[in-house]
Image 1 (tube, helix red, strand yellow):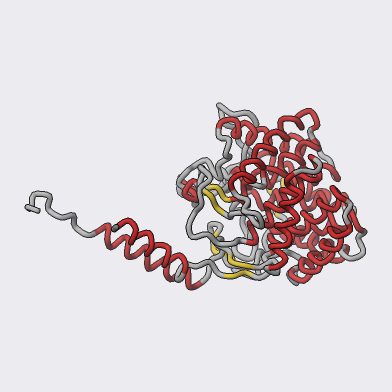
Image 2 (tube, helix red, strand yellow):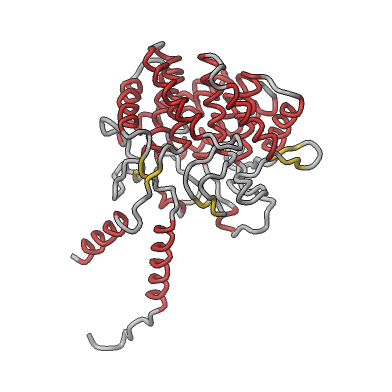
Length: 414
């Protein structure tokens, strides 16, 4: 009885004071949907996917920031508090989406926007030593390198841009310098093949040990996808090594843990499966297989097995569950997260492009309809807002007060 009351109270708080804010046209939602529409058109040749890509492209052009970059569209904490409206390097996947549209359908509609995004990279890229280049994750928040993946996303986007639009010597130098930097900062595990990136910049001395050793496998596969797309258009031997090592490491992890974990520490994210991240393994592995054909069969097997788990556990007939437990059970409260669906939609589209027709085709069609009906907008659990920060602080204070309360004397008679 007491357990039921506590559960009901928890759900009440999560559905009221801590309810996720609604986000309109999050950049991740828009560029993942655009990439997915492009891939579905490549797979099927169906004109409807071209028309859908046209509509989503207009949304992406509308949310590009005045400085040429892209912002996710809400406050969130990446080690510092990113404020809505500030462009960040991971959101340069928006540049990839612009370039992919231009590659398939002509560059007239996207050339100006793509050039402004490339100039954003030029503006914020930072020389590291003699010949390496990095870029801050959120340069308007802190103009220092905090995490590695922002450089991967900027590098991948720049490589795709150079392959579609060409570029000057400085942009080419930035691209090659980013690859050298990313190659150097990868790490190895004694008992695992390949290499990985720690999430946080290991040269900083302001991390606690828990955060310092965090490895984010879902982001690593998103990085693999971006580098693989760049490698297909602007190849580099350093990048080929990065792709092979990063993909091999996660493929080996899949052998040990068929449900690939979010991180290397179950204390993060309650050891739950976030579908936007797990689904990223699919396009990451499939695009890596295009670059590294000798490894393609193994990478495809991982992609298929991840897709099958998602299909069996997360698909509800019109959308995907955003978060699941590792046994496939639901996590309450259940919110429809359009950003999460956009990532899984793109994964389905990638499967259609690289593996041919399958169950993913019908799922992509229905998932797109659901997202479009929601105007590609909705609640976002990743987003921070003043209300959630205030009530979260109150709850933390109450918990600490309870923890400090003296324990009852065990010798007293009951």
